[in-house]
Length: 535
Image (cartoon, rainbow, N blue to C red; front, side):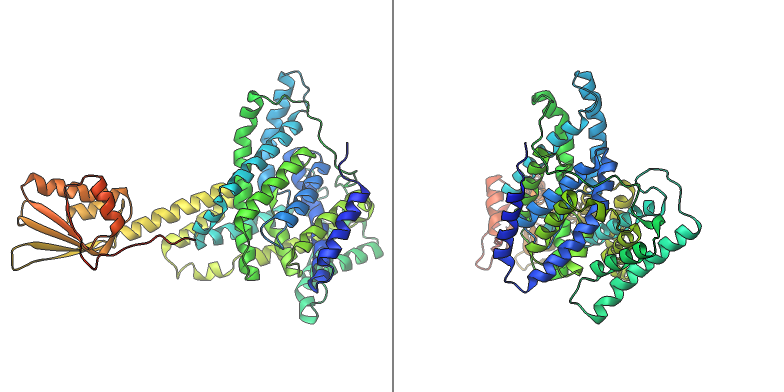
């Protein structure tokens, strides 16, 4: 049963024309969408092969996710589709799913159905994250982590082009090109890159990437350079996607099997999508909606799971191609999705003749544009912790291809580094007043990292009977800080002395009173009142 029909496609195109056709940006969006669609084809096929499924499953995912997120996602101009970060996770799911299907007597090819079920659950998780507005926590990702992320991803994209220099790009262990074939391949890649670099200096009326692909394709076909034609890649031709007829049982055992994969896929997909959204925000000097993007990614994955796609997320390489080619609106992503569908249905034989050299040259330019070259210049100028985080996140991304692990590790290391440096800032001054009371003037944040130094700075046995701690220049950050103040009161109470706090914030006063602390609190007219900003 097919929910897609020529009439539906025409209706969508008509709607797009009426909504976007009167805009000046429409031409740039349509041309950049065509460029992106051409570049999506080999990547979608390659990622499907990595995941251990049919290439058409990758193409279906690229078409559906690209189209749906372009319409309802939170970042106009950002391109989503099947990605390698998710494919490397899916391969284990497919293998184990095949084994599970054979054990249950369902057949040894049930891995793909378990994959579709996992993608549907993945989408539901992402929708839940959107409803809870968890996407806004992307703002907590430090800039060094962002640099490490894009640098690592640029290296991963660069590595992904190596198979293009073999005789059969989709066959692992294939023989490397040699002699004239290698020279021709390298020369056409260089020509592609030169056109992309130089054309914008002459005119910006036409996407340089599309011009480069077209020029190199005409040269290859005109000169009959067969060795550089995209052959050995599985045919991209197919029919309209239809609703999957599941044979696997939908019960608790199935859910417990797919759930770990679904949560990992959802986390990796959202992190890559939100990081890409942040990068596109910086490139376009506009702001996307992280909550809407979570919802859009989730809905897209639910749909593609039901209609036989392998799922996906935002693609940083294709998004940069789109932005560099002038695609800034939703029409660019919509056009890319519809062009890709048209390739699958009507133009597969033509698209299969596009040289690998042209597409590889485009991706090499994406690598150059993605890598944050300024991060190399500033490594010796920034704090050592930040420099270490940049290198660490890049290395984890390249080694594991697990973007979620790389980003989470980078955030943890950055947070620990911040806590360590902040703990060094606490210090105190003291003086004895004329009435014999001793005042400690506390400076710096009081939290889990600084409580040790805080406790060492007081001498209950040697201090006078009355001690005052002035916290005008300090701030209690967490429960560890509150507990440190409470224990300070106990220490003075045990030796028969009193300790009093002054210039303490209202929220901290309330917490200390609720905890029934032994520290007396003086409320002064100039006590600070910290408010939490609503963002």
